[in-house]
Length: 495
Image 1 (cartoon, rainbow, N blue to C red):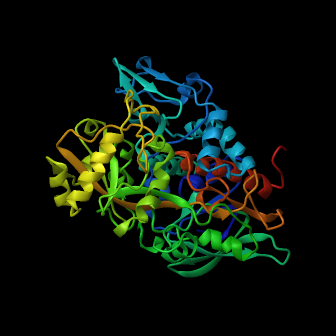
Image 2: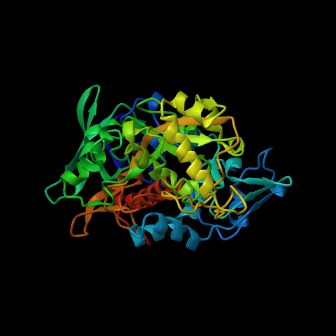
Image 3: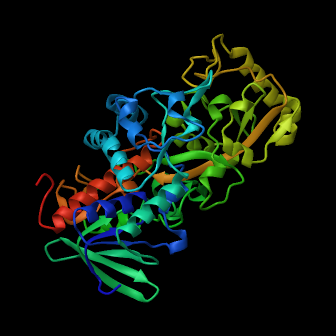
């Protein structure tokens, strides 16, 4: 570092941050990226993600040009249903209970495909994900609610490709540098940040600052304060460096908080997973719609088949957190075992030839678990079982019911997987406009300040459509980088 000055200063080197940096650099701005983590732990939450991107497209031919064929999914053997902007918007509004900001939702949906296409021009290799396809008669079908677009190599592969692109374009990235305070002039305009480094505190000046340093999911105190009792004890799936610093710095200078501050992405993970920086690829347990789930008392507590897992997995962790000991068990039999996703092979299942034996192995009252299973089995209605769609095969006369994929649990041996709650990211953040400028309480942009990714609020409430988190980071990162670079050059969007 020759001087502590740049045009655009990006705080955070995850998906949102690097895309913001690349977009700003493309506009001719001098860009510096600040990353709290050391180089070997770089990548933010994005490095722990599965690498899926939800984007709207009218026809497969809109996404085919940037997709790379793979040996397991040749293009002549696939069929992809369109996922229209209306469908994306409807899914977003449905799962957020109509609370998502309509302007931000429109921005996310409309910019999803252009952003994914632009990322391909920056060296991101996109593939179809076989895990979201249904195989029939030698062909692969991607239904409209599935998420076919995936970065090669998952989240780690995505970040490796983004860092490679940043290095090719000569972007400066400073590691082991924690942003601790926004520098503001007498008029209230941001003019840089104060950094804490191994060499001490330094001031770094810029014409524009983009906060892309995540939410507060790795901050136990903030989790307890905003999410509620017990949340300080949950396992953290992603990076340890998302402690809410960027959000707090912006609030300190008058930024408006926005979004669902008591809400978060909370999914079910292996009960034996690490408490911090658990590897998503190994610990996720998303085949629950095909199971019955019971708590340590042997009782069902949730509708496992409410919807496709991509629309419910991010809220199921909260349900488990509320159970005794914050533990639940997903139970499968031989009819559903073959549909389990790959990560289940990484965990230790409890296997039993009978429900009584299973209860004894789990330390549950056998009388209660047998009654739970018998009541469930008796309530299963007729209908065709189809794991690729909402099949309407439900239960009747029990509470909680099961809305889809209800099959009697009667084909031993039975497999039970212990799960707990894992937090991925928080929903509360900073209020932004459609240029990703950070706003004050009176809806005015704070001069020279932008935000992207998990630092932003207003997109997700209670839940989110699976794979839209990385898309949100990419869309807001690109728009923030473009707007910040133009501002640093004395121009505005549209000029």
